[in-house]
Amino acid sequence: MGSASSGAESFKVADLRQNYTRQILLEQDVNPNPFLQFQVWFAQACEAQTIEPNAMTLATVTSEGKPSARIVLLKDFDAQGFVFYTNFQSRKGQELAQHPAAALVFWWGELERQVRIEGDITPVPEVEAEAYFQSRPRGSQLGAWASNQSQVVPNRDVLETRLQQLEQEYGDRPIPRPPYWGGYRLVPTYFEFWQGRPNRLHDRLCYRQTSPYTWNIERLSP
Ligand SMILES: Cc1cc2nc3c(=O)[nH]c(=O)nc-3n(C[C@H](O)[C@H](O)[C@H](O)COP(=O)(O)O)c2cc1C
Image 1 (cartoon, rainbow, N blue to C red):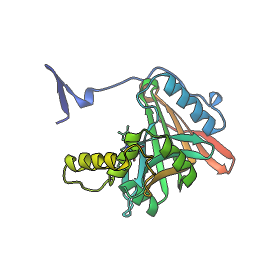
Image 2 (image 1 turned 90 degrees about the horizontal axis):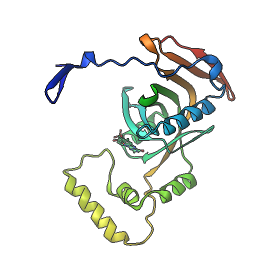
Image 3 (image 1 turned 30 degrees about the vertical axis):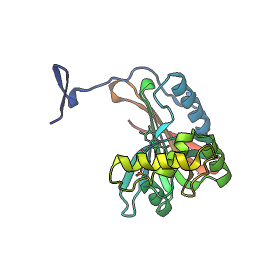
């Protein structure tokens, strides 16, 4: 256990070790507004050509109060919050209906950076979800109809057949947004910006909301 082999070599997982040396994050360098600070780091993650810089882990809470996490794509962000799209009937959709709060985690390895965001969840207005759905590639639009996300499916053929049927059914006609498909916006009350540093003495600056437009910045021990 705890070992892996690639080709002739075998190594212990415990021996995988990275010393972070690339950048630093000091109080005087961060924007007092966490949304603007996120904008700066997100732009840098895009410039650094990280793979899917908008991929984020979304953690929700089950009806038994247990954690549940998966990756989704950030599709918009501004001072209103962080938007992702999904199937409302999926596991995450059901969990968010019961408990409309979530946490997001970004990991931009090339920059040795992590961002954590926590807050409440609100549905994206219909008109906004509609505009985004219509901007998606046709295959993704049909995929939203073909998949009962998170439900057990007997085999892959069922999905492929369903997709083919939908392709024939719609032909060249526009594909409407499924009623169970749309967006959520996480409205943050907490941000944490993490910069890897040598000897595990990482920089962690967190922002806690103290009033609608005021954020208190504190350094956390790594
Ligand atoms: C890089 C990446 C991006 C993804 N983006 C989305 C997304 O934007 N929306 C979505 O519903 N699922 C997305 N998924 C799939 C989810 O991780 C997950 O499998 C799916 O949403 C079902 O999750 P659930 O059963 O917890 O609801 C993505 C997966 C990966 C690996």
